[in-house]
Image (cartoon, rainbow, N blue to C red; front, side):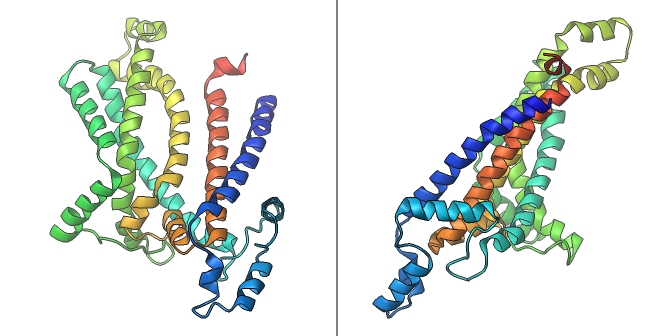
Length: 314
């Protein structure tokens, strides 16, 4: 197991290096010059030159990258060009918000997708199967931004059940926090539930054809016990690993949802940084998102080996 994890980490290191190179160089393609914005309306040439020297923008691109990467390895991702706040501090403030949103979305996905997938597999070819498949197609087809707008109009405007937007921290009020987060979490979890349903159904269909399931039925075990204890436990092995990867997609894909519901998370932070040409923030947020996704890929590989005993014996 340790050698397996070591090999995966060795593979992840060059991936992180390549990602950091792309993050650093591609953000240079963003239109506009942030120094001109910082220089004010007068744009004094001396002020512009001092700002370029301060942020090392006059150095060659490889020198800029090495300096930035060296600071990043020490936990210093620079300072926001707009606010002067350290990028790491901004990430520490915004990351818990997006993590909570992603965790709640994953709960919706698991609570909807796994039962629907199990029911569709157990009653293959029935109305339950067709209904769950139609639900999955609906979840995969409808865009998040459109579903979010529909929910705001119906639940917030028409029924006045939940606030349309905004965010209340957990430290201030748990109930208000849940009220502001439940709709965006459902929007994000909707498409995820559809994907989880399809994977669960496919895994269950494969497991239900196995000899040990037929043996359990031949022994006279009740059908719910056969489904839940013998079939579902083995079918969830690929579903758990896939869910880990989908959680990484949630962290990276919450941009539109956070914008629609005005949630101050990672997505809104990077959108504001792009519009304000705040290069340091863009670099830091994208790098942290990419590293987090790579770490979740590593976790998925490890979980698959832990949950599947056959792989541990090879």
